[in-house]
Amino acid sequence: MFTKKQSPQYRQVSISEEDDNIYRDESDDDEEDFIQKQIRLQRKQLKKQDEGLEMLSKQASRLGELSLVIAEEVAFQTRFVHTQTVVDMTLKKSMIHTLFFVICYYIIYFS
Image 1 (cartoon, rainbow, N blue to C red):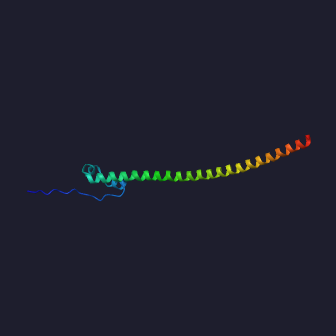
Image 2: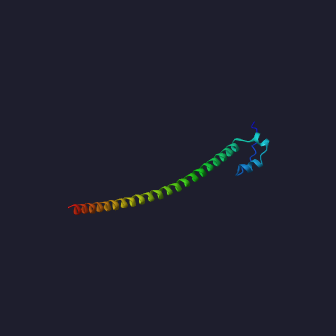
Image 3: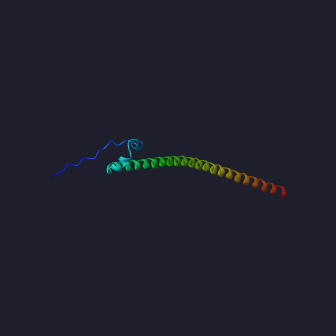
């Protein structure tokens, strides 16, 4: 009445795809079942995700380094502008004093 089906022969799934390829021959490809295919597919997807995360990590690190360089440059520019403003104000005061003395000299000399 009921026939007993043979259960498929499962083997231990290796951690890496390279290990899996060592023990697999052409006849296994024909007999490979859905679960093993899914495990292999998930392994490939995890590998792609790991590569993507590694690339993302490198880019984030580079972006961090770049932002530090930009922050240093902004700080330098701010100090430069502040120094330039102080120098400009000093020059203006100096010019005003010089102009004042020149006017006074001409007033005294030509009076």
